[in-house]
Image (cartoon, rainbow, N blue to C red; front, side, top):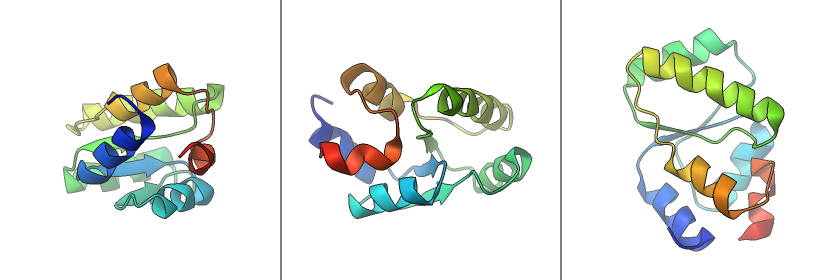
Length: 111
């Protein structure tokens, strides 16, 4: 992935379930053409892990890139992987290395 357009195309075509924190994050990605998005902040962590683990889908976790989002990402990733869920880190790592965004809802401003 060399730029955000490639990143977005890759995310759209990945077929992975995309986990985001809240409604605004989901709206931002939906407006960019990303489908199969699930918000996770309205439920207890264990409920989200149970639901996602049942589907056996590969997931992309796009929690915010601030301190709280990083902590939530780490915890969510740990519990999902313990339950056999494959977590695709490429998309999140790209954002860390190549952008200065801290909130997923601000993605629409970059693209």
